[in-house]
Length: 139
Image 1: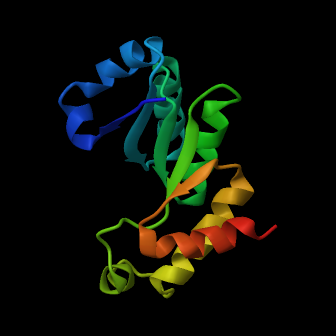
Image 2: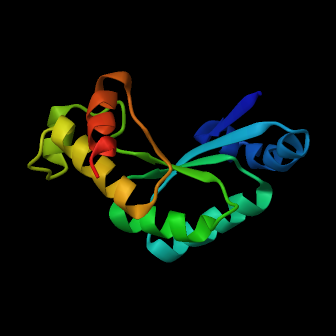
């Protein structure tokens, strides 16, 4: 099975028009846009990407964003993957954003929230995957 990734650069260069022809050709399409906005806007975006046939879609792991995405995708829409903390962020960036948690604890908290909200999986850099996996396993 072949997967194609459409990220920001390709999406903004017209790449979203590739989703439907690729899925119609039996390909899986990972739309990596890390959606984050008010709930209604996220819902409409997920509905649009669902109509195109996207297989996977990333959203930021904020509870309202994840909940909106899960609700909008329904039973047949794309699998929702939550991005806990951007890979380029370090501890100083997280602290500057106002978080009192360190990155590992923030990743773990967001992973628990994602699981509780019905998100299908997580997107995390290799060093952060262990925190996601431990949190995902917690019932």
